[in-house]
Length: 214
Length: 242
Image (cartoon, each protein chain N blue to C red):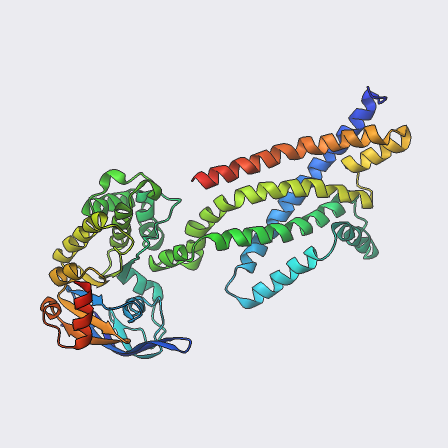
């Protein structure tokens, strides 16, 4: 088919599989780090706001491929031989935590101040106010932009090609080197990316409509 | 008998703007006090000082045996003694009516789920909304939401309840049902302080009316005060209102 054998297609699909694995790593890591970032960014304590804001500025001010290089080669200078997957996972975690932190900070602040006040006047503790009253409302607001950001995560995993991680882009590059059919190979890669991303953007739009109706 | 709230020359500023310029007022247990006055006269600020939503900058403020001007008092204990109902209801939209009411008793007073449910049903019948227990706030009218907010506050068994312009966001038809609930509470002996624009209601229900003007209690009296104002300011205010 199209001058490619089934083995070739399987090769691309394996790359796509690793793209999904890296995306999941990036999302899970980004959530674990991004949630505290969001909390610190919207905290009352100035020091927490300054530190978390510096982290966000730093990560957002560096291109993702450079973060990949820094993690991969930087850590190997320090004597740690990292598999490309781990290095890419760390870089994706840094990248998505900075953006998710900002998105979620906005969602926390989108809950009206009067909700904090009402909870406070019912004698709830600050933690109870946040967990029982603010967080459930912020999560509802956060679902559409978070799912939307998953699309960015999936697409940006392709930068891991710079440190030689075997993802969809890398497998397409390797396949092109041996088959010399760049148009066919990269069109298939593009379609595979689209197949992963499209359902996510549909889901995001659907959540958004649902939220607007509520 | 000791007053449950005592303002003594209370001052409060927001930045350079002094909103309360020496408020002095006693509120006795079991009475209803109405704070009236123009917007910007400081009546809402005075009310919010009572449960320490605003910190005062000068004078003395005693609430339920605590000296709020000294600081160091137990803020959450104060909040349990003093309930407040807001103009914008501020129900929690992700919780049902019953859950809205049960949240604080369960978290703060640590009572069990069944007991909390019984409590919710008790206060809901007090405001005539038992059948709405499992609805979400958005399914209720403004008047019903405000009655739920009153019930939510009642469930904490406060010694004193504050009402901050609770009918200002409602149309006249719905205002009536909320005022009826407040009047019933007054009859049951609940100590209440209300900021209100409903002059007829204040005259009928309040034991004392404080007319606030320029950040002070300008004129203090019973319901009859509105019929025979002593100061030209109250005269003008009542004249424009009625």
